[in-house]
View 1 (spheres, helix red, strand yellow):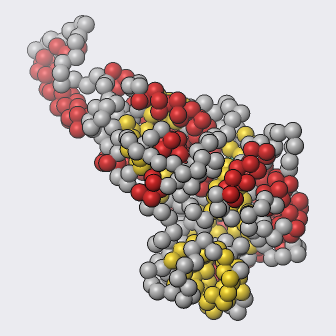
View 2 (tube, rainbow, N blue to C red; view 1 turned 180 degrees about the vertical axis):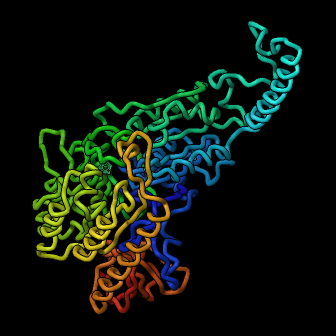
View 3 (cartoon, protein in one colour; view 1 turned 120 degrees about the vertical axis):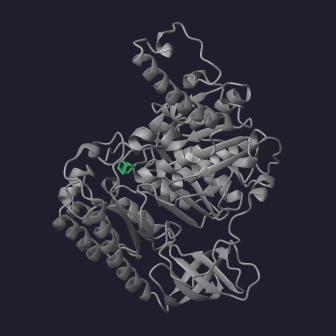
Length: 552
Ligand code: SF4
């Protein structure tokens, strides 16, 4: 699967001072070439899928290309989409040229991300469409000349007067009349995810060669939609958001061999004034705890020792089953599944973050000591304009819960600069929050106005240049905080799950429980997937460097 952006669930794409292994990293020069051997090649994925509940699957036949934009939720959705297609006998390929079915799983959280999808679709415009577009322009020019000539002679333009008209071979038809699918090389082109939900059937107007438009809330319909396309249907859509179901597939093709993702809650009811997610992913729907726990048990049997529970607001989880587990109880139950050594969760909303979650982390060493708690701004006035439902002081109370925990908890966040009306003093409050909380990583973004959001109409927009200035200041301040925090770990020993091997001899990388990236040396021949003890010898703002001193 090709991945174009790496932004978190609440992250509006931008520049981040990424610390513990999430999102875009600030380059540190001499880092390891991590990841070189982490992910199986597409051919390997086709041959052997590590699936929950279906074992090994051999897939041949038609081909598909799947490109994913956006957050971990999208990554995981793409794993499910790939699972559905592989189960239907499709084989994944590495380029759109080689594929029969081309799918883009899209992100619309920021304008740039959405534009990129239409740029990709433009590259797929069939030759006949290009011809039609050129013809349309020539025809328009010819009509203009003709109409001028005839008006000069006091006559109606011929192309307007003739009724009814039969379109000539060179004339553009209405998009709905065009024969698109299986034209231009016989490809089926689909748009999935947030842009699909946001633009809906308008995508057919903008890119008439697209034949599938499906939002994430309708993914359960994908097998049926694909079957309809295979049967020769020209256009199919899945755009419902009023469903109680979450997208559960029996077959999920998992791309990360070390960390298994599970969506436990879909959609969002929070309605932040800048966010498209409630519109594109619909209202909150939680998956039954019994079903989640069953999948975790299957994942453990399949060899996974680390799972990450996902949701736009994962801690707003509301168990629809009779057990009515709270989120903290679910965390504890997942942590107790035999074979599971690490449980992560993202993204938490401050409003629903309580002491019970901190207690679950304290009680279960298996629950990772890392919480991503997006704040977005350090100013209560801006938070109110954003409709974030908490003040700076209330947010800091949640931070205090974590700082008082019996074991250290790594805290990371998201921030937006340049929200409409953000005065210099508001921005100063955001900077002072950095100093006060001492985050291990911050994903900072320039505000980007999005369609269908209340903030679109807000006054006092901040100029792009000023947004850029604020972002640079914030990143510099945070980079310094991370450098100091990481330097304090020199001499400490961490348990590291090894998930990368460099091409350089004896060099490996992995993640700590707090999600810090650790690059380390070891003469061992095979460590991928193992837990090892690494002593830190030096530190940079985004990663630690050390030496393996034993197995964990
Ligand atoms: S509406 Fe707010 S809480 Fe919900 S996904 Fe968007 S930013 Fe997160």
